[in-house]
Length: 256
Ligand code: DAK
Figure (cartoon, rainbow, N blue to C red):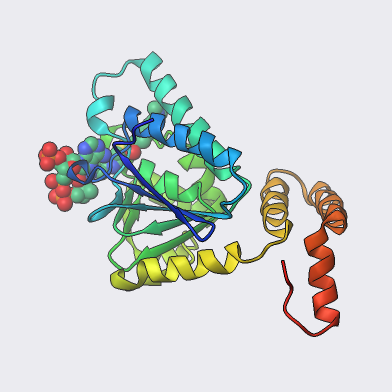
């Protein structure tokens, strides 16, 4: 497939996807969803990529779903639009490998929802966050109503969605929406440092840890503990786990 919106680079076990439609502040249109799903199809077949980084070109991460595409929707089109976006973002969230959103600017509406479907959010201090759908007579349609409450708590989610408030990066950090704020020129360096740290762990513990935490959040505590026990046990079949334990005992770094 020829990519027109996504710029994709893969090196040192890290894939970086740049969403590049800067004239529309990287708003998510149908072409984006086709290209992104195609990219995920490829990514799921590879085992040499250990971390995915997503960022935006220009002054925006993603300024939302493409409003110009939505303007003439009826209920049927609105349903299909929401369903396709939710399916794509769920797929992203359920990737085996960790995903980092490097938030360089506006993360509004569908852009904030995209960032929330990632595992980590690191932002430039120029970034702005919000769910401004109320200003359009809408509610978030890419699971923002669900993920925002899970990440920031009920009161914050109600406040952000019902008032369409815009948050600075520092406010988003205080709310627990993001993990770190950096100077704009340090953003990619910080993100790549984090990505490398994770990518250099050669064991299955990274994907297993991600899956266990995410599955546990969707169930009750007792069931979550049982999922953890099963996952913990399976790691003892892994050569890399044996090497990690042995290396500790021998006071050396593991040779994954
Ligand atoms: N869609 C399409 N084009 C957009 C856009 C968007 N979300 N955001 C910006 N653009 C375009 C602008 O129209 C403008 O295009 P030209 O006029 O140059 O052709 C260009 O990007 C530059 O934007 P501005 O000139 O406005 O730039 P400023 O720096 O002055 O302002 C801004 C930046 C981010 C504050 C402003 O552009 C803005 O307010 N943008 C809209 C932000 C927004 O409301 N985002 C949420 C979109 S709604 C659902 C499924 C999904 C969703 C909802 C429901 N179901 C189906 C139920 C999700 C909805 C959304 O994400």
